[in-house]
Length: 231
Image 1 (cartoon, rainbow, N blue to C red):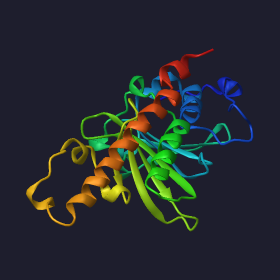
Image 2: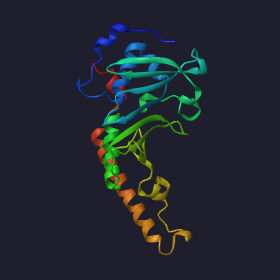
Image 3: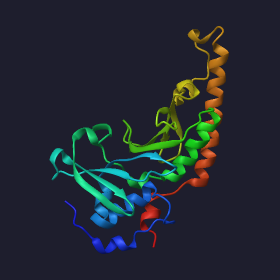
């Protein structure tokens, strides 16, 4: 579907050679090799066990010419190291929706900063992180960050909006508090009694951490459009 532009590969270099590429840098490799139109067909992007960034990024693209309608690229060491058809289950997004890159304002380096702060505030200690960028049920881009122990066991998950950096939801942290929990600030009938105070403190802690995460987002915010079109 997309033609190869090998000459552009010479222009793709991470900020520091010894560091693993961020998500934006991996997508820039894809755009350079297959043309900018390929960036309009991104279904999902995944990196596992980053410390803080993963050694390899897997990018799933919507491609009507590929078996199953999607293809899977893997980017490592400043180049595409794998290009193959992907099964339908590999898409990872709601109904195979593609990501509107114009709405991306958070690179994986910024995601790590927000996730690390959230983990610290919930007393969750982790060794590495795995990243997934996809669309949610509304078509909005969202980062799903899984915190891993030294033995690579999942110990918590954080959902962060890729447009505004909002911590939307956590799993295994803050007792699984969500935005709905925070907004619902009245005490329901079922929450009264000895556990009502505990739930209130959890909500308060989640809300405070969410506010602090917004401040971090303001510092690490990075437009993908600005990044990809810079000289």
